[in-house]
Image (tube, rainbow, N blue to C red):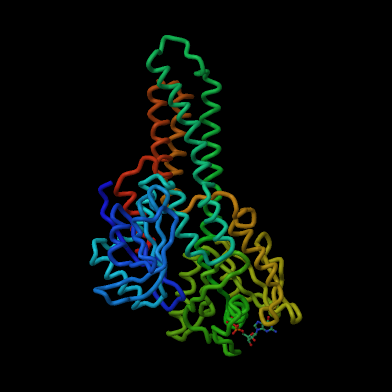
Length: 453
Ligand code: GDP
């Protein structure tokens, strides 16, 4: 191994009971021995893997802190290299001083994601598992955590490996056929061969089909609340966020701009914008807000269009209805605690939920409708779902190539031509899992990680 030895603080910088500095590389144990003095007098280099020593981190005979050094020996460590993890008290200054002395004694500052990148390069896990780590760390909801966990324990790898294996067998049959085209090659029966490709196609399609719902669970959904002034948009937003964030008043036009908030509804994070009430207005400031609100309808992934059930629909309502009709919209009919005067047939064919934002009733139904419209209702977060645009794009490329292979076969093209398409599909899948991936792609992936990961 020629990689230089790296070090970084592995825990968040703040005030914590413990903070950990990780050192990895050929000289990890030697570097740690220069700065860490165990109370037993034993050197870390005398310890076997998975052993710990209690001692002090020392800089020029001055003690920085006492703590525990844990020794991992290659290949049985996170990175696959020799690793020492030193736990000391979790103070910002303390950790920085300890890291400084480690860097002065032969280690280099780790780059973003460099520990995980080394683990990947040393075959500890594939890219789908590496990419799940970010989700494990940053999960904001139980569902997101379960999704990341499923990928981390190898759910995605297993799924893709299976498709790869099918395509590798297909490739082998084609190679045999191309080498000996005049012989009757056992195994290359046209019907079976096309079935194999169709089954690979179905598997890839199946994997891709859960991507969007998985993304909603991980990243949340850009949502806009629209409606005329005074229909209860701010009150609805407050019901969802459980906080008095928007200004609730009886004066039409109070919410003059887009207010951002992030709320959890069931398993889904809504990135919410409460907007100025949409109606015809001569007020210049207000009309800017109205324009912005209309713009939001076109860009949001989910529109909650609010109507006041106590009043018949007027021109402003009907105009809004036509704006949101072809969007991903849930009609929220508000003020259900009061007598209804609204003609519900106007919402025919749309998703409608009746609520009283003021009394927080109808929340469950709204939550159910949101999970249905965003596709998460049928997604089991414990199943393997592709993580991130990179993985999706690779799977999409593989699907295109398998489709081309099927078309080439059915179009009577040569087996070589079919083989080229199967190879393209394999290349895309190998890139997805990282079995065959360029340095540029790998660098790009790990650059998104933080230093210390
Ligand atoms: P916005 O202009 O659409 O944001 O409307 P607001 O949220 O400011 O609400 C306008 C008025 O309607 C306020 O007086 C609210 O208290 C009232 N309101 C909102 N939701 C309800 C509800 O569900 N029931 C009743 N009775 N009043 C409501």
